[in-house]
Amino acid sequence: MVKPKQVGHLVINVTDVDASTKFYTDILGFEVAVQRPGATFLTCGEIHHDLALFQAADDAAPVRKGNVGLNHFAVQVEDHDSLRDLYHTLLEHDVKVDRTTDHGMTGSVYFEDPDGNGIEFYYDKFETPEEGLAEMRRPGRQNTALAID
Image (cartoon, rainbow, N blue to C red):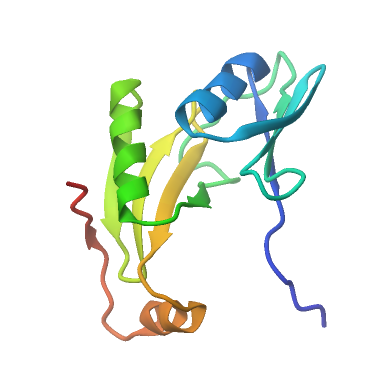
């Protein structure tokens, strides 16, 4: 049986590639790797691309929360300070924050892009992946609200 190494990149269809590119670069800090007609490939700065935005068909159904499909995708930041900076940037740009959550192993901020795609920005609260996995599996672990400031 195959053993996945990691999730590589994400490609999402959007209603307006230019507007979405502006959102993901100006607000969320992604860098443009390359743009083509109807598509933008974005990077966090280390690999060829982490996220791609493709122009959806004009008659594409809108994203609807709770439908079958992507619930959200997650983007890791360095630490709590970086997450706090993102949180305040979202508020400054009138992006509605759905919730902040302390998962035990991560601290997270949840919100949506202009098309309603769910996004989580998070930081790891443990030094090693093994410690985070142990916390995830800890009996009785419960999510709580994350204090940002």
